[in-house]
Image (tube, rainbow, N blue to C red):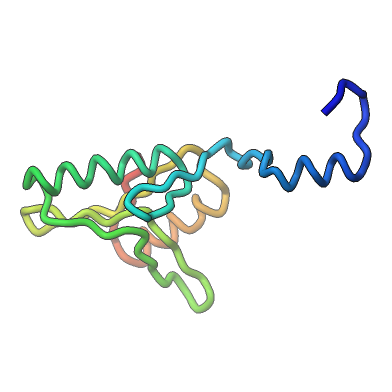
Length: 119
């Protein structure tokens, strides 16, 4: 683009098509092992879980499990970790807590009597 102060409609459309749009919360989608994560932080957490699994620190983990909160309302966590002692942890890797997330978290914790661990 040149240094003009205003763009034409065509220049703006070209800018949008190049994928120069930033995420609302500055998160960068990241792919690891063919899996796409909403943020680099979430992808890094996945890599840490893989190492923990290989070392025997945990029994296993699940990606993006979905919980039904009410008819037509669901919550998708980032991970569930299955610990060696038989317990499990619901994990949400957060950079920013939206109002929607805060509401769903309260409903989830009340309904399932579980705490969401935020990383």
